[in-house]
Amino acid sequence: MQRLVIWAMVAGAILGLTGQAAASHTGLLFGASSRVTIAMREWAFAPAVVTVESGTAVDLVLENTGSVSHVFMVYPKPQAPPKGVGAWYDYVLARTYLQDMGEILVHRRGDLVVTGTRIAEVGVEPGKRVTLTFTPTRRGTFEIGCHLATGGGGSHYQAGMKGTLVVK
Image (tube, rainbow, N blue to C red):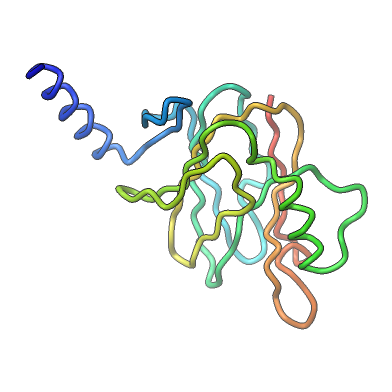
């Protein structure tokens, strides 16, 4: 019993130092085997194309290097773009890629923000970094977008803040 407690303390210390976490169906946290950093700025994601492996836990590190808030959404690209920010949100809420694939974590170093099995968006404030950890299960090509309004009827997406998630 004493060895188990010592092992658990060592494992916790290692995870605390690395700042990495990945979800499993058991609810335990482990280091993800894949990590991609995505910069969010006015009005782009960099890189614009992100490729990950199906069945392999991934940390998507979302770093807002811009001066305004941004959101990260992943969904099947629509045949015709919805009209207006509200219609986009309805579309993404109904079709978000981040649903029904087991646990999904949103966390910062040493701080769990949210966990669930369905997440439609991840917001990141200017100068902040948030990690989205999940195991992709559906293969294909999906759109990444920020659908916040810019004022005057426009949006971050219309200004060019979109990209692609490829799941092999």
